[in-house]
Length: 197
Image: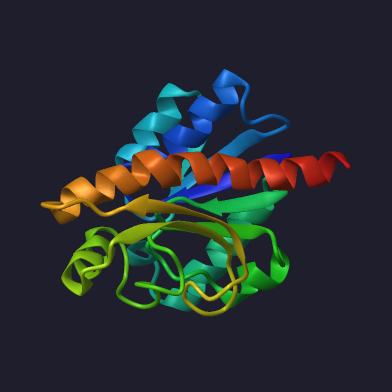
């Protein structure tokens, strides 16, 4: 199964996928391409080190969002992907891409959806909101991407305890280590197993 991974930042979830494939815990899967909207994304270096083709396609390089959307769809189509994985991709996914890959685009979100999700909830903001609300349990969710933000069917969730004295940064790290880095490879494996069946 060939996957494309879309990233915007540090790429820790991308690294979790790379490591899982290398360790043999994620099988039947090859990362065909990594695409970022941000040329400064450290995720691109992670891809480079792992020998994975990586490219920048930024909305800023196009006169309109429509042209960016068209190019993103056209570009990804060139890799014959079985699954598209959003691993911290902070760009709204074009409806044309969702139509082209129905039920085959997944996203990792750093909360237990439906809590702390939707427009404006990404990165540290999610953890700031969870702490401000005083929740005792947070976590991460892998879901299928649909036309709205964080509303698609949930595939996997994992709870993570909020501890006394947590800062948003500390909580973010714990959610990554205990939930995100485990869930995302597991979710990809579900698709890889389905491809084999």
